[in-house]
Image 1: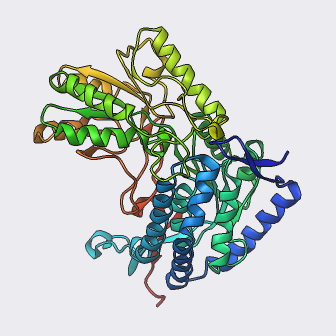
Image 2: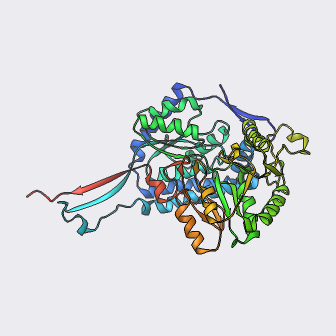
Image 3: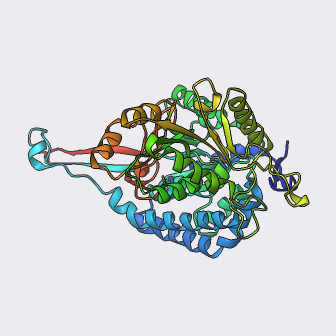
Amino acid sequence: MPIASVNPATGETLETFEAHDDAAIELCLSRAESAFRQYRTTDFEQRAALVHRAADLLEADQEAVARTMTEEMGKPLAAARAEAAKCVKALRWYADQAPALLADELPRREDIADAGATDAYVRYRPIGAVLAVMPWNFPFWQVIRFAAPALMAGNVCLLKHASNVPRTAVALEDLFRRAGFPEGCFQTLLIGSAAVEGVIRDRRVAAVTLTGSEPAGRAVAATAADEVKKAVLELGGSDPYVVMPSADLAAAVATAVRARIQNNGQSCIAAKRFIVHAEVYEPFLAAFTAAMRALKVGDPMAEGTEVGPLASEQGRTDLEELVEDARAHGARVECGGRRPPGLDPALAAGWFYEPTVLSGITPRMRVHLEETFGPVATVYRVADVDEAVELANDSPFGLSSNVWTTDGAEQQRFVRDIEAGGVFFNGMTASHPALPFGGVKRSGFGRELSGHGIKEFCNITTVWMGPPSA
């Protein structure tokens, strides 16, 4: 069946694409294998020139790229522009830093004195074609943060993007083609989820990385394990946002709003569970609710819009079910909790949902343990740091966390005890090229970004030099 690009703000079908059949998939895999034979022999200088060229092209195309993202998945245009700019930064960072990140590692002479070698070192070598199964919520950034390190390491890339962002997927392949990468170094596979297993199992695919849902992660990881292939997974998140009495309350509230509604609330690392100390609970809840209620919901292409539509009708339905379940079990709806009234008639078919604050959450409610992928926040009251830590960890996920406190002892307690891949103090969780990104528990395994991310898909090779023959 054709793959459709649908505008979530209007329900309009923008464009359709024919899915790749078996012959087209085979051609892509053959090209990837041929490309890797050549590309793996390039040096860092050659790769960096190509990646810098891609960054320059993306920078020049920023407005067009941003509009494509907004039209396909509904993020506000200002956020889409920022995403494109972030991708440019990451491309340039990896182009410049990869030689140092992947430099040969030399052990101390005294450490290998009894190894029988005249010399020994560790070299990072590329492994081949890496398949990326990517989500729609950050349709350029999620791909660039995989592709930039993979290409700088000497690998080639196969992209299976989310089926609701095919225009973005095609634009990404075109970007790397125009940058001058050899044919087959970066290819988009226009395929559905059912075809992914076959691609992973193909001998020409060396590894797979997935950002997406827990069920998708389980399926991909199981196939990769069965084929004894490396996998990196970044799955869901239900990140805690802890506010303690020493926090700058005004800053904590303002940041809480941005942390919850970024990308229309559709972000794995968006703060979702707001855990507030009893001493500041009431003023935090009042200010946070007022700020969420005041957000401007509307056309994501319009300047000034703060919250656009959900990316899919099913996504809105899922969110509504979580809110209704919480309401039925006694949660208080402080604001929102419905489809927004009074929108422009042109947006009547769009998948909008009001920014929503829920309080009085109990473990009986689905929202207590399930991820809310949309502009819905849950607020909890806790008595002390022990209860805050316990509640923060009462989740199957462990992607990141936010903590607002200026107390040094409290900070060290949260660093030690929060079960997450990151702890961000007095600020908002964000991904950055220089910092590793990933989680624990059901949020996945492995790391993206930084030196940790670029080494995930390298052959870490020990090189041992024996004495010359007599």
